[in-house]
Amino acid sequence: VRGQAHGTAFEGRWLQFGLGETPSEWTTVAYEQTPLPEDGLLGTIPMSRFGRRGVWTIRLLVRDTRQLVRQGRAQLNLE
Image 1 (cartoon, rainbow, N blue to C red):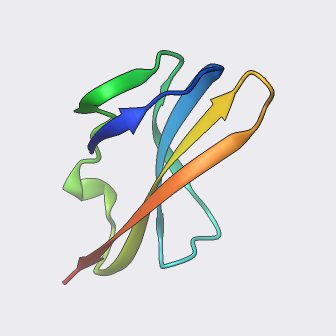
Image 2: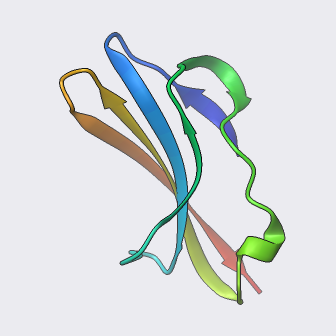
């Protein structure tokens, strides 16, 4: 998964995935405390981690030093 993760008071970033359009459970595949201001590798999710066909959601969480969290999401439809 490629992208950017940064901010003025950046503290950490998590890459997670879950089953469905609105997952009730998330699996963390990467955590970093360093920002990624340019397009780069956020983390790797092997295809074997997706246990079945269907819609999966990938999200990136970014937290700042005030404990505010922002997120971005993308969905995959595995057939």
